[in-house]
Length: 307
Length: 289
Image 1 (cartoon, each protein chain N blue to C red):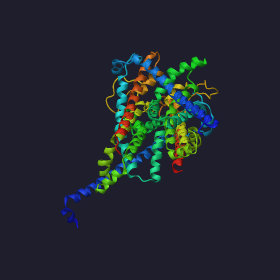
Image 2: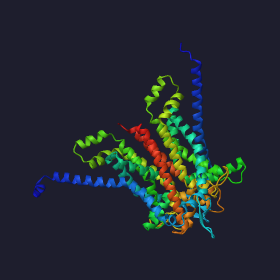
Image 3: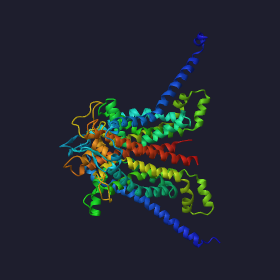
Image 4: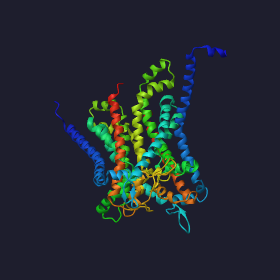
């Protein structure tokens, strides 16, 4: 029946062609779709590849995680302990969350439940713009504005410390947490509120007894994403922490973060050296921790949608 | 009969207090940023002039302008967009128009969330390992832009997917009933209705890309270059890295100059974001369905 196709009207060829184009496009967009997976796997593979030599050579689990001595360029004996760097990252992120969690949840409740019309629109746009300020600008603010303020107010010799970076990071993370938390509050159906109000509950009782419990998972997701963001922030903590290796005992101690160490040292190392590979190993650690945080956040938020 | 009881009045006051308390928290969150912005403008504005924007740095970067950094940022953004916009739109079309709700789609979504959540310095390490070393692009605009493209891919995907999904299902069904293929429906009906939404996403990506610093530090941006880049395999200066350099790495830096650089960078980013927000509002006002 081969020549039947040549004798049928052109429209049949047209249909045929359309069908092939349709298939081709389907394949193309599928490639786009899997690209995200390819990249995330690629990130892990390429970082591991560069860090491999260290991980199966000098790497010593105990020293790496439990020694506070990060001396990758020591003449006598190089040590690669990231405990102090973990302490730096944890202290700064912890302080940032102490500031950002109450303020972002408070702001989210205010925007979602207590404001309307123009006020609400203006607040939402402001929060969105705040979230867009680049991290290097925040770092500069820590360096040029916060630093002198801290030195003057608290009468300390150095203003680049846990306090500075924590406040900066808190201000950075709060807008993002606010918008995610606000989305979570908005996702609570209005009929919940109406039912509670019909029972005579005040606005605050509605929020406290009905809206917050219903939005619990979404709010937790917002907090987790804020933690992930603080943990992975690089430029702002590089510029505002003072960048000296320390296990902090007060907020006025300078510290150094995991991310900042990579940013400050990668440029000075020779490709393939133990130091270079150790920096990539820190990268693997950062990747795994943020992956787990994001995974939990996703599972928590998904839980609320099913319920 | 409807006289307010003691309990009513107490609840009333309590609610007022909560309202004021939450409003104050909102104020405390926004106020410092307003003060910071005013300081940036107050100290940075006197630095900015036509000469500052269109000449290169001189005297070991302690004087002169920022033109090579400004141009470099534009180049990095353009090359990054060329890579990420087509890929991001394809991914969004797949997720919105083809994918069904199964484990594979969830895996893609998880990967997108993680691409957005992985620390920027980890993206930088990936850029070094993959583009600079493995694909042998060297430290170049190409390597830096591709790193930025992968990092900001989620911005395009999420914005495009949202605007595709905002197109009502009935539009597609009407088109299919006329005998159109899936692709014809997407091209003639879905995409034209979503194009403004996609554009807001692209503008947001421009804003994100131009502010990033860590991913380009080791992949293609240089502290200082005497010449402008001649092609995508050259290194370039960039505004974000320039701010880092002038505020931390250069001795005897006049106090005002970094404020000028910071002001230019932040104006660029906020302008893009405002544009994207304005476009979104215009779109919402125009929408007929």
